[in-house]
Amino acid sequence: MKQIGAIIRQGPRHWAIIQQENGFGNIALSGTWAMREEDEFNAAQVYVRVVGEEDGREVLAWQPAAMQPGRAWSITLHAIAQGGLYRLETCLQLDGNPALEWAVRGDMVHHIGVGDLWVIAGQSNAAGYGKGPFRDAPELGIHLLRNNGEWDLASHPFNESTASIHYENREWANPGHSPFLAFGKLLRKEVGVPVGLLQTALGGSPLKAWSPDEDGVLYRNMMSIIQSAGGKVRGILWYQGCSDCTPADSSSYLERFGSAVRHWRRELNDASLPVLTVQLNRCTDAPTEDADRSWGRVREAQRQAALAIPDVHVVPALDCPLSDGIHNSPAGNMIIGERMGKAALAHVYGRAAVHAEAPCLASAAFAETEGLPGIRLRFANVSGYLLAIGPVSPVFSVEDRDGEIAVDGWQITGRSEITLKLARAAEGDTLVHGAYRMNPSSFLPLDSGTYMPILAFYGQPVA
Image 1: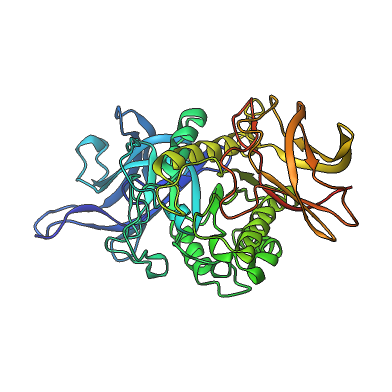
Image 2 (image 1 turned 120 degrees about the vertical axis):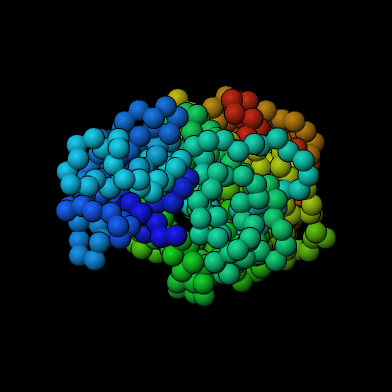
């Protein structure tokens, strides 16, 4: 049987989140209208309104659509206040009947919000491979654009490929738990607006897949998905780097990541688009010297990117538990999601009271300790004071022109200062590293104010 009334052909789908700008969002709709052949009338007019999904209160009164040839119609609803969840309702008025509550039926779109869209990009820990039971239930107001092209209530696993229309980021295996529902819950609670998540990550993907300077296949897929959601987003959540832990790729990671960020911002016409990143967690594979140094270089590039590129921020993960040799467990993902959420609150939403920075090495200088050669490390972004969980743990390493210098121990010598004791005096140019290996010490110095560990560093010259 043929449908009658107002029919929506294009516009947001159920559960969609519309990106707000300055606290308001716009919604474009278009469609057709129809009546039975036996119905008699002289004129028809489509109307559209917005109501609260929870209580039915009228948010935007009935608005007349532009009527077009071929029984088509279109309308753009302007200045819808951020919030929701909302319901879009349409109806068909015949012959100017003012009682719109009795107009001919129309299509509706349920559970939509005006809030912020965040893109999830990177490799498997962004796609979410946490295995095992967890308590991280769906929550109204945190929605996900699934790989089938339809919006849904966000629930794990995010990057599952049922009826996928995006083969570019289809996972080989079923993914699991990810950090980003926890991220969305924190923002929803603190900022009070709906959060939409666009999943574009792919396990094992190298950086070159995300840059049009190189392969660019996932860059193009990401931009296509963003355009399908309206073309504007609040920021990008980036967790990637394991696949670039080779001598060649790690050495160029910082430069290539900076180029990728510039392309993302240019394509999205947002020169200050926030990019929240995660410094790589550990990998428990059998280490080699090349692998250790490659992981160190990528972690250092991630630290340097946050220092050198405006509106790029990094959170640590080295203290987070794993569910296999390289993937964060659900417990680890909950920690990372909260850290990324706090980074967004501090740097994107202007919450000055939120301390979201991990201790970051600021300087390294030679210093005597108890009459023996040593190195004094000073850290920025310490909100409380540095706290040693395992002061005998081999966190730091030093090398000079003659090779590695044994670190006989280290101790915290100030609120934001650590002093290393060296087995011998350094000769010539000297470098210090912290937690740089594939699987470094599990007992890193912590900030007592946030209980975040220091960011790993590699190749810091000693003054």
